[in-house]
Length: 405
Ligand code: HEM
Image (cartoon, rainbow, N blue to C red; front, side, top):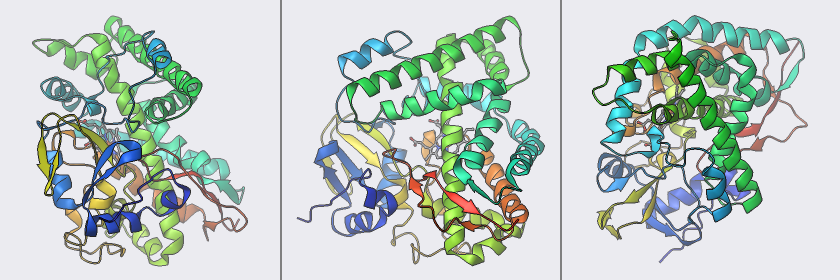
């Protein structure tokens, strides 16, 4: 049997994970990666089957790429906060329905539409801050701060608090992957600080209601028959804050990198009619969330392989999005493709991305703005882009660009 040398943290695979995944789809579409104790599901049909069967594939630990339980030191640090705080992305029904109900009520299409002028203004302000410099790290100066500030305004977080929320958000993600215990204890402490921050912010809103999304979540909570406790609600702004900015950061970085490779993309992004499909195609090809995790609740078959109860599964969105059985010429950038709507970059089923409309809005405003305001935008010739090292993510940590001033 072909051994699939899957290692998302290996530098070569961080750069280009797709050949290994293509081999897997052909030879062993559901394979076991022993070093991570993960069953990786790579074909589009099988990925959909897993996402739809949330009874057999639980989302508990959906972000956890490390196979071992947390070490005692990490558990101790987490016990200082709320170790069972539910995060929407990691809970199953019926609790998932209750939390998702709250966010659907509060995070309405109208609220997103109202954000549009703010997204535009924040993006313009950021560009005005570096436009004359001729060179920046696009991640640090634009791709991080834009979605972070948008999320801050949406939730009602003061701007000066954003840098620490950004750091704590990274702590939450890094806590989930293998690493030295001392470092993981630090990440656990960061997560606890973030939990406290949101519990306190919601408690304040209980006393003094606000118009922001956290205020709307508290209002929706008070209307429920069986209201969630404040720490139960606090997992939601925490999750939105993290899921809502790191993903868009990655999408912006990957879009720029693709743009440097494919000059025709520039024209497409600048054409209001063509841009939405170009952005969707970028998301399909790059899949900022390459995959997330599930745990089997019973013995279950997927893609002809029987998984035991309790098996850890990685649902590989990035691989599904390049499956030749679903997408014609899957590695080609073709925004006109008629199979584009089948991409799973935002997932599928009950955990489908809540922020997809906001992500599309941000990318649709940010990318053309960069192209218009930074003529001749290109990679800085003497700089080496650095990929991010989060197990399930695809994006850049550093991407230096320059333009004509
Ligand atoms: C390009 C940007 C984005 C990508 C690629 C992306 C991707 C995803 C994916 C693949 C899932 C499904 C997770 C699963 O099945 O386990 C998801 C869920 C989620 N996303 Fe996004 N996302 C993006 C932007 C956003 C934004 C802007 C927000 C918030 C404003 C957000 C909030 C969430 C939340 C809260 C969930 C969990 C939903 C649930 O479990 O019911 N995402 N996202």
